[in-house]
Image (cartoon, rainbow, N blue to C red; front, side, top):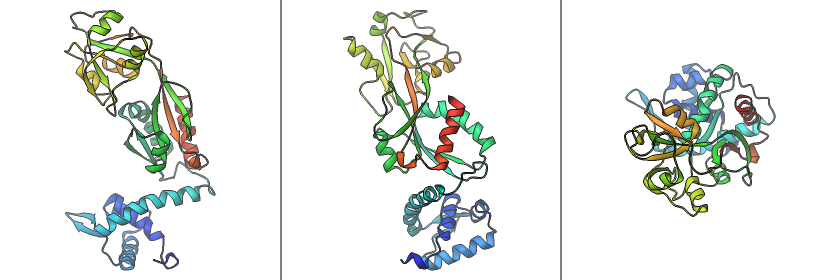
Length: 301
């Protein structure tokens, strides 16, 4: 297709209708009347020789052609926005920018509540889209998944190669046990730690966590009776059991009272962890992303 004869503004209409599946909502998001939006949609349908969206149960459902096109439009529009953003200022109070961020449940838990409350006041039209974190290297995630940022988790301050990063939170580890545990009360020795059964949090099914690594350096291993993926779910498995769970202190403090749990310092020296915000160097000069990083600094540092 010859782009010289194609009105690229029609792709904005397409993108919003694909997002909202409603002509009225899509038109409203672009500050257009429904009649103007419908006229533009009719032009696009004629140009592509496909209905693109069909009303089913009061919702505009995408045709197969539209589903195919959406994958390209979803990639192209952010790139165009990135290029145009270099030459114009970023007005957060009116911007409808969508920031796409990959995160685990725990990094979401630490990051989003404060951030979204701030954005609701300072940037009410901005959207945050959270995608599942991936075990891929950070640089690959940023290059392959069309992300603005990745929320990461590490135990040292060595910079990741090929990416920009900001450490915005640091914390220690605690060990949770049930208050009714028959053998552990107000203190936890290394001998007890090694004799008891443990829950290991492994977001991607890894066979070792930081606790296992520290124990291995000391010549010890622990018995993992249960392994699961979520930092936020794991504490609920401790109450009423004899399991031990070593996890970030911030979560341990919040759940220990309601779950009738005791929080103890682990009997080994587990290095503190850092929560990091990562972004690709190619987006480092983008004004929207620079604004986002500055908000994180102001809120957390």
